[in-house]
Every structure is written in structure tokens, then in C-alpha cells.
Amino acid sequence: MNNRITTLLAVSWCGIVCCFMTTAMTAQTATEIIAKADQQWNGETSSQSTMTMTIVRPSWERTITFKVWTMGDAYSMTLITSPAKEKGQAFLKRETEMWNWMPTINRMIKLPPSMLSDGWMGSDYTNDDILKESSIVTDFTHTLLGEEVIGDTMCWKIALTPREDAAIVWGKIIKWISKDGAYLMLKSTYYDEDEVLVKTEYGKEVKTIGGRTLPTRIEVIPADQEDQKTVLITNAIEFNVPIEEAFFSQQRMKRLRK
Picture 1: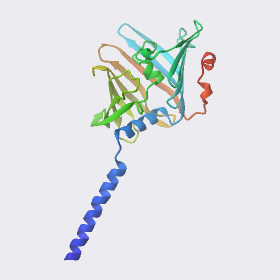
Picture 2 (picture 1 turned 180 degrees about the vertical axis):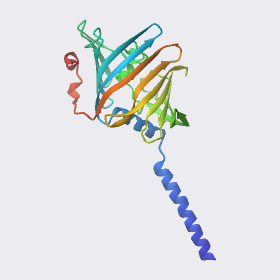
Picture 3 (picture 1 turned 120 degrees about the horizontal axis):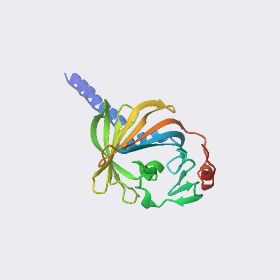
């Protein structure tokens, strides 16, 4: 009898230990989830993409196409390829500095931090959104709020709170990231410093592009404006492309072509 009890206790204890070890191995912190979602979109080292942005307003619409090159979180270059009025205009981010080259007036403009919250090219995206001055991984603390279904996909719901020493234009961000292993950012809500909702961002039309599964259509809808939105379509993207730091220079900005 004693041997049987001992055996049962041993089996039970082994089950508890195995369950604990499995949970420990599979459990992820909110920061780890955010980091994987960020890597899924931004790549490990570098990327090159072509995009189309449509700005929708109650009485008009306009479409902008552009190319983007990135290297890590520190460097990015954006070139407007249409319409003709803005064609050739370029934006550069080098670590904490941002520049705008305007060929029509032959002028290079340094963008101050105060312009981070301004709408990029008149859209519902901010300069910070497009030029990626801030990092959702390192410039925020992350709190797992629970789980919620977006569309038909179960997602982690995670709150991002700016660190005190980070130059962030938002008071808080909440992101819904898919639990299906793809780490897709399917919804994000952005709040000001008073925690008033400013805009909501949806990731749609999930496809395999550039060897990765990503939402290829992003819709940004402002909270206080009716019949207004910005739609961003990723037409093509390549990850881990060969590119050097020297590419991200003011001299290169002036020579970029469609």
C-alpha cells in the first residue's frame, strides 16, 4: 500500500512539475509579445517597401505613393514618387534627427521634435508614425490587459505607457496582437495625455508578402472627425535587404529617384 501511495504521489508531483515547466516555457511577457510583433513588421535589420496612401476627407480624396528604406530602428528614408506636385520630396531619419528635402524649392528642412505629432503629408498618420522616431519596444512599458477577439482572431490586449525619458506624442496606446503565432497588430488605439481617444488603427487584408504574413491594408480613423480616414496599402516589401548606413544621408536624399 505504501509503495502504491508513494508511486501515486510521485506521478502526481511529476505532472505538476511538468505542467509548471511547460507553462514557464510558453508564457510570454507583454514586452516579449510587443517585440515579436514589431520584428514581424519591421524586420531584423533592414527593409525596402513601396506603399500607397489614400487620404479620405468628406469633400475630397488624394493618393500618395512612396518608397521606404529602413535599417533597424535608427535609420529610415522615405521618397515620394507621386503625385507630380510632391514627387521627389524625401524624408530622412538618422537616430534622433529628422530631415525633409523639398526639391521644388531646393531646401533641406530639419524637423523639430515639436512636429512629431503633426499629420504627415496631411494624413491621419503623424510624422512620428511614418518616420518611426519612437520605438514601441524600448520607449514604452507594457502591460497585458487580457484577451479579446478582433474579427475572428483571438488577440492579446496590451497597454503601452510612455517612459518618462522618451519623447512620445501619445499618452497611451493599446494594441491587439494575434495569438495565432503570426503576432499581427490587428488593432491599435491612440490616446492623448489626458487619455482621450485620438484615433484607431486597423490591420486588414492579411497576406503573405516579402516572405512574411502581414496586414497589407492599414486604416486609420480619427475619433473626432466624421467621414475621415487614411488608408495605407503595402504594395511590396523586402526584409533584410543589403543596405549600408551611408545610404541614409542628406546627400543621398537629393539624388533619390523613382
